[in-house]
Image (cartoon, rainbow, N blue to C red; front, side, top):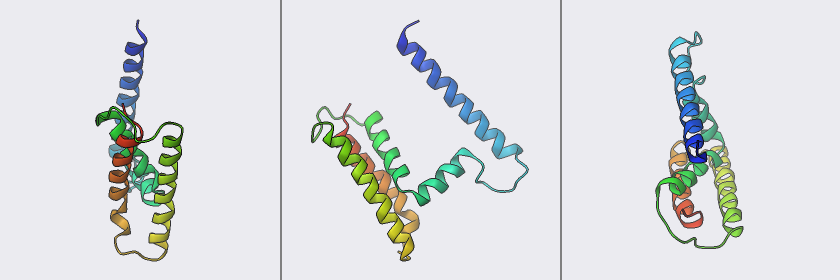
Length: 124
């Protein structure tokens, strides 16, 4: 069996397992809240730590958007990505701390910023 087939098999098994677990928790958990599902956990974490939605944007752009060359060379691109994610996290903390009116929708901004930087700094 080729390594790429093993990788595909592992990814498929993990994805099916996570989806099955999420459905099981959503329908059969006796505690009436949405925070026990994988989606609920990621939503909570992404609302408090902006690095998570930023990282999802970076990964989404890296996986599905095409760019042949990076804006800057590694390892500076990795430093820039981590630094931008840290800035999003600090900015989000300050926005929530000082009652910024639109703090609840900022994770979408972080996803978009991650996509722009992901396609530019971490090409295919």
